[in-house]
Each structure stands twice: as C-alpha cells, then as structure tokens.
Image (tube, rainbow over all chains, first blue to last red; front, side, top):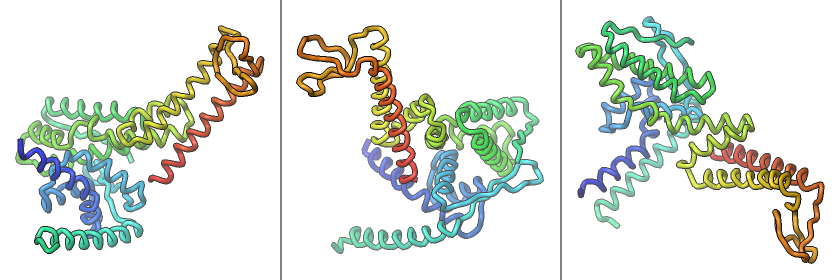
Length: 114
Length: 193
C-alpha cells in the first residue's frame, strides 16, 4: 500500500502537535475535557482515540503548564476545567514563535527557494 | 468530589455502561486512590457530556458511539498508568512494585531496560546468599591477592577471603545497590519530568 507511509507520517505529525493544539485551545478560555476534544475535532481533522487526551492532559499538568479544577454541575456529574498556568502561557508563546519559524522554513523548502 | 453513576432507561445501555466503568476500575487498580477517582470521574464526565450532544440517537447507540471514540481503557490509559505506577513505586521503595512499574515502562525508553537489568542483577547477590547456605564452599575467591570470582571455584591456588562475613557482606552490597539504583531512578524521573 503506497498510502501506508503517508498515513504513518500524518499520525506522527498529529501526535507531535497535539499538545501544542491543546494548549492553544485552552489559552482563550478554560475548557472541560469533552470541550477540548470537540474544539480539536472542529478546527483540525485529527482523529485520535479521544481517551488519549486524558493522559496528555495529565502530563501537561505534571509539567506545570496547566492546572485544573472540578466544577459541580446540576446533573451531579462535575466537569473538570483546564487552564494555563503562568508557565504554560510563557511556554505557549515560545512554542508559537518556534512554530512560525518552522512554517517559514517549510515554506522555503516546499517553494524550492533553497 | 464524588463519583456519580449515569442512569440509563435502556437496560442494555446500563449494562454496557457499567461494563465500561468496571473496566476502567480494573485497569486503574494499581494507582493511588485519588488518581483512580480522578480518572474515573474524568471518563464519566466525558461520557455524560458526549451523550448530551447525541440526544437525537437512542441511548444505546449514543453510548456505544461515545465509548468507541474514547477507546478501550487498557489501551488509552496505558501511558498514564505506566507513569503513575513508577511515581508510586519509587516513593515506596518496594522492590516488587518497582519491578512491575519498570516492566510497564520498558516501551518508554532504553534507560528503563537498563534499570530493569540492574534490578535483576541485584538478584545475583541474593542468590549467592542462598547458595552459601546450601554449600559452604561458596565465597569470594582470590588468587595471588587478586579478586577472581564470587561463587565457587575449585583449585588449590584459589582461596576464600570472607569466611563467615560472606552473607553479611553480600547482604550489604545488595541493599546498597538497591538504594543506589532506586535513588538514580528517582533522580532520572526528577530530571526528565
């Protein structure tokens, strides 16, 4: 199958950018888990097993980039909201800068300027 | 914060749901209580919210859809469990827990394989202690004032140097090595994460 390579490559790119996407998503306002997934699905075509988001959220929290809080709901089933910490905001800025640089370099290469 | 079950009108949906919840509980058994509750509540909330957005479907169809997309707990929670169990094991200094946690982490990098092998090498010293109990010839052998072997070597030119101190010495070495490796493992975790 000639698409095998491309599919693998795509899934690697998605995996590699997922934390960047998640951090961007919660940078505008605090979101609960399901919302994060909905936003990712709407704004990208990423199809990850939705459950894998939670280990990722846990890691971001452990790295000190995000915090979370449980908020009671009328249904009795609380939502866990995620938000960026100050460190998370700073790190996201640096990640965005890096992303822009990367974009430029990729554009150069794909336009045969090198 | 407490875990509250979702109630379904459809019995079959209820069964599928309870099955999935039990599955999560089973997979997270080795985590600490607070982590277990956290994971359970988070997945429960996810299921609940996704059901709210699928009101047009039947309960069962919506639930199956939601669970399918979440993925099986065994698979999606694996990285989380590997990480958490190592955290817990290095806190407790419990050798069995550490071995288990290392096994879970073997896929996460070569260094864990090295740690695993180091832990296994600890077993050698413990084995020597047992060997000494059954065969008094086991010992630390020298030849011409140079270390030759741990164990049992035949030949007049070899001589044993530890005597009755063999078992206490092996025990001390094993304990020392154990503390050293576990501390290194802790240090590694502290640097990486």
